[in-house]
Image (cartoon, rainbow, N blue to C red; front, top):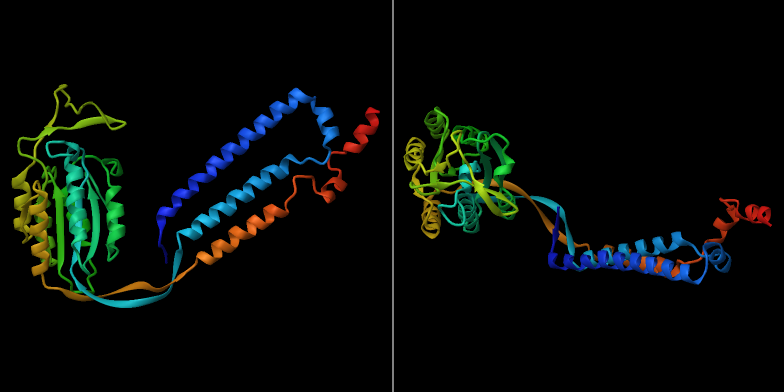
Length: 351
């Protein structure tokens, strides 16, 4: 396992493409100037030891040296020991609705963006709790297994989009069924499932699965996103709205938040319905709920004793710089002796 202490220094890697661009421009300028001075054969006679391969090799070596030196600035660290740590907390799984209806903008900036904001802020308030993320539409998919790595959870969450699920529709039952398999049955932790959705559900056995989850000691909480008045589903191209989704009759589809569906699921899942349209109130409600929850002890493995590894990258960077200093633009003598292209014989035959 590794860590990057100062990732902001990676921005200096942008110098490399600039250097490469300048190198090719200089190469083009030299060739253009040389053509004005003399023809190709005369130039070869005037500078017989000139090597075009060496110039490409030198720029490659310089770029590698800079890359290693920039990486050293970020101070990469490597975990050298895996240890078992005991923690106290609860297991939380978020089931995020990524169906097309979540693109509606009746809640700013959109239902999906609002849902991700809420989950992210909840994660920021977690202690030693473990978290997992499921995404669903017509099918459900595991986005992140149960983990204590909250930073990874937020990173994966930000990438969640409607394009990640090929089968469109809204099947909350699929999310509940997958969530049941997410928890570790060997550890008797408190288990919470938060379904973040606009409540559209196209399946009939959702309540039955909510009862099954409750039997497995999983409490289901539903977070409603959207308004009951609803809104159209925008169709975008390069972040610009080019139209709205229409039905088979050519009329604009208006998607509404179905509060009652989510209330029924929460009731059957022995949880609670939460109105997610007011972000801070939602965060406070969830925070209060988790604070009052009984914490269970569980074991998790994590890397420790992180050691600095920057010196290896500095050494490699300096090694390439030394190699560049020793690398001459002339052809290497032993390569010339090989006479791979039989140049001397060709010159004699021309005479």
